Image (cartoon, rainbow over all chains, first blue to last red; front, side, top):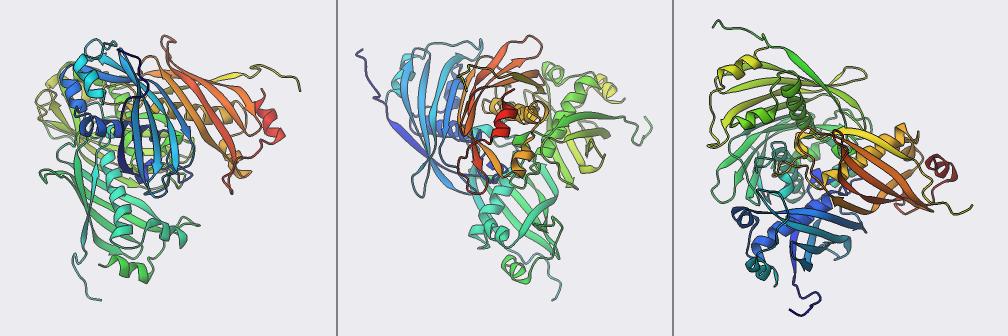
Length: 141
Length: 141
Length: 141
Length: 141
């Protein structure tokens, strides 16, 4: 296979800030942005890649986060709507690197961006495992 | 004013379970249902009572929870959509008692129900205060 | 067995407020008090009843919350130390009613109190099940 | 001032996993490790740098997270004790870069490590501001 650069689609999920996401500064607590990314990935696995997390589980697979990196640009506040865009940047033998951005829906300004590296594991052993070809294909859109 | 029984409207907010809401049993963690109720109230203050929380804050008021009571009937799971219905059951001089139910969207079955008593406070002193007549009116729909 | 009233011991766990527990008012978010109660029960199952949660799991049992009731008296703030006291108030065939109080460590004032009703379930079926005699005994201290 | 490399002390805080920190895999949810780091910094500001967060607030300052980077090595599980070690790696005009590690207390193995870049802000304007000399000094231990 020829080396390819960023041939993957990006997908978007719309969500809304919940009151329990806010910290003492009335902004979304910094770790919640990463919860939003996780929620977007679950949504997009089901809706965009057509393989919900439950199917991974049924086949004995799991995903674990190996690395998370987030840069905080602007805060989100109470009740705001936002868009989480994610895209696979690189697929490794046993994992994927996903880039993300979180933007306010009303003005499209970036609030947070970064990447997350996921490793596929065998749910029984807990060890990393190769991504099966059919899943590589599903993820190669 | 004559005594009246439950003359208040009920309102609904639709939400979705986030992955970070789940506990080790793959069900929504029990305290998160109360976070959903809070989110529904914020949504409904803005959309149904036409007085968002920010307006309370601007006028120097706050709401604090005095009592929370929840009965757990059925669990919500990953990614499920649900409806939070709330209604004012009783308005006191300095607070309201709000009943709630959380139902799965797909089958309308009750997952959690209960009530929350909120007290209005003066944001500066932190003490309970009478609900001003215009807010009583807004809440009397 | 003769009816007995409150023959059960109460136990205490000391904890500390984490920054991520705070809400926009710089007080502990109202649902986190119930997280503290859960943490205290896990601590006390292991340390006081000498049967950690992992042993329940190993034997195929689980605990689910049927009812939670909390009254909020005074807020806890950033970094404060507090004591969670819990006691079994009543043991049913398939569950226990546990009362709790959360007090600030420095002045012993009550911040939150209430009760939680737990039902024992069979982990496979998810249905309620009788508490085995040896566990009734362990809990009867 | 001569350029200096890593002249700063590292400090440790001991904490314990709470049940509400766990995800569906019975491991600490990935974003909670960053909550532990924040809790450790608050603890160490007060106990080690002798300048609690409340003093920053009183002087009109705040800290915001600009970048968070975490690498996940081993999971923490229910009730485990762990040590969060943090150290200032670099002090900029308006911020600090703090490295951290989270280790299981019983075997000292690294569960998570990374860094966080904090920017000091003026609490009124919300903009970044120079760290005053006396705070630079307090942080230079």
